Image (cartoon, rainbow, N blue to C red):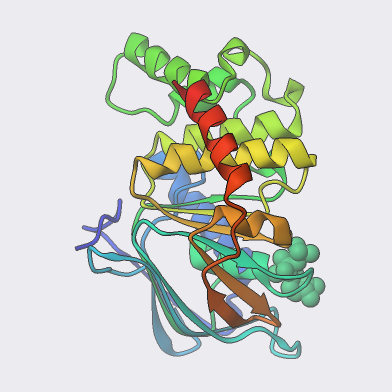
Length: 288
Ligand SMILES: Nc1ncnc2c1ncn2[C@@H]1O[C@H](COP(=O)(O)OP(=O)(O)OP(=O)(O)O)[C@@H](O)[C@H]1O
């Protein structure tokens, strides 16, 4: 059973080979804007691409998180494929990390999964709604103030209740004092926390984070990882955490290594038992 926001009205678009990533991004933003006003939860979409029917994202079984089979993507016909037939599955509720070096196709994969880039071939099924946190903090926040960033994610509640829920979400990430702050006055790490916490108010079934700690120092990175783990653990959410930092692997339940757009390694990550336990306690305490 799907949990798509658009289950009743999938969109059908006929497009020529001229259809490319940028047009797709613009289209998806317009569609999202109508429903979420935040441009961050991707709608269900059915596309006819280069004569082939492609459905993205499509219906998924209840136990499925992400299903990717033989997906191909190139930026243009004359360029080499960035994703030359990638396949993997992430079960519902798993915290999965994708590790890859610069240029291995991580961001491209994130955009393809999210739906802002259209693959040329293959099959993708993702539980819905799906949310994406970008590498650059400025790409994740779309309103001028922190309070609006949160309250616009809460629907069908009174103004007072929205403020209560928004303050509570900010409290959980230790930033309640920033409720009325301007977004452009926040640090990179604060922006990423606000981005994740506000998006989680929309209850996404799948959360993709594309190198979310890129702007953080080592200590903030660790805190952020544990914070996200704590926030998602109670929601049985499927998480795809994309990184090029080997040391982040110990935080995941599963590790996929991507190389030249293909999965070359799939296993349990190596774990450091002592450090994470200390950190989990610290964050759990703060989350109260
Ligand atoms: N808009 C674009 N147009 C053309 N080529 C692109 C575009 N964006 C990325 N590429 C190319 O696609 C390849 C994969 O890029 P991608 O950003 O997916 O890699 P990545 O693994 O996320 O790298 P990084 O860790 O540096 O962010 C690179 O060779 C890059 O030059």
